[in-house]
Length: 123
Image (cartoon, rainbow, N blue to C red):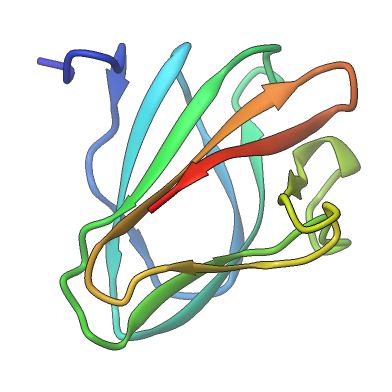
């Protein structure tokens, strides 16, 4: 059963290297990140079937590892397409240095007027 606010909760996602994520999302999706020890870079998010205006995604670090962080790369040219890139609050081109170690979360929404995933919140 999805959590109260989310209509989609994906199974824990194991990250083992730097990558762009390709996921099937609902309107409001929770993704639990877990995996090995390290600092992993996420270059972008490609929503299956194409990015949908207003889609919201929260990434939660549930790895419980003191040496595991996830860095969300702002406007990264490593994303497969410019429309899959993240825009972070520090001017958009900067990187958000992550969720973790231990626990943390970051939430983005897809803004079709600028064709980017825009950061809403982090903890």
